[in-house]
Image (tube, rainbow over all chains, first blue to last red; front, side, top):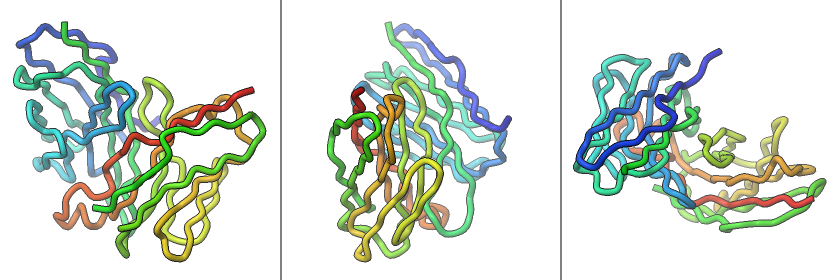
Amino acid sequence: DGGITQSPKYLFRKEGQNVTLSCEQNLNHDAMYWYRQDPGQGLRLIYYSQIVNDFQKGDIAEGYSVSREKKESFPLTVTSAQKNPTAFYLCASSMQGAAGANVLTFGAGSRLTVL
Amino acid sequence: LAKTTQPISMDSYEGQEVNITCSHNNIATNDYITWYQQFPSQGPRFIIQGYKTKVTNEVASLFIPADRKSSTLSLPRVSLSDTAVYYCLVGDSLLMYSGGGADGLTFGKGTHLIIQP
């Protein structure tokens, strides 16, 4: 079955440590996205990538980094520069198509807790 | 970027039809309207997308008036399992691919729909 796989599902980190969240898709989608969701809040866009080897900052990119070396993979690194990293992180992908709005397919999410 | 406004929460009962309205007064000519559903601790799931008039699928209907300044998601005969947060997004994917930025990718706080027995 095609879909998006995020790992790990739960992650604990000590302050000052970098951590990388994995996102893999086998939908052959061109674009991939990372969102952050805090309790009771909507999703906020961190980074997005329309094509391999290219990515753009979203609304809250500070303290995060990404890479897009393969079409299928879009890992997110939460660096020690991110002041409040505890959150639910969601990866998504979409296909570049004709007119319309992006229809995003989401993964199950990764919950990061900083101890 | 078009902004959207939705009610923060709504209540209804099993078996009822639920209509959630989203306002998007600044919608652009090429913008589409997309709705997602999210359950706790899960990623949002696409429900329906439309440009004008009415769109229906096996899950919901989307009504868009001629001026396109609002849209209404209609859920027929809801059940307890429809309790979730519903998000309305407005945007144009072609704008993103032409370097116009993350159009149509902004999720607000959504509408928390609570269905009671």
